[in-house]
Image 1 (cartoon, helix red, strand yellow):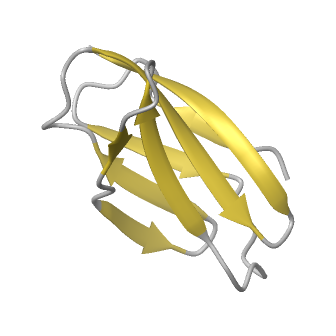
Image 2 (cartoon, rainbow, N blue to C red; image 1 turned 60 degrees about the vertical axis):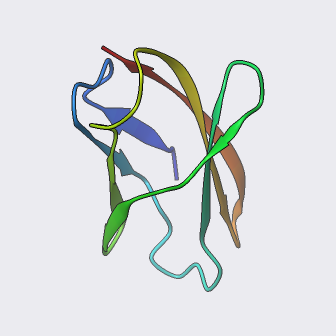
Amino acid sequence: LEIQAFPNPVIDRVTISGISQQSQALDLKIFDRVGRSYPVNASWQPGIVEIDFSEFERGLYLVKVTQSTGVHTVKIYKE
């Protein structure tokens, strides 16, 4: 499955799709350009995750999605 993020750039909430529904272990981490980690405020639905970016400063973030099918990193631009 291909991991996709939309809308991107994001203003408040971003949806990550392409999450394996069979994945037993799903972990999300958010990092900024210098590697600082941020808490993830997300809601989960089958195959997708919605992440709240409303409290984040403007800039580039990396969302690392770890699941049983592999590790994927998605660039998110916060407006």
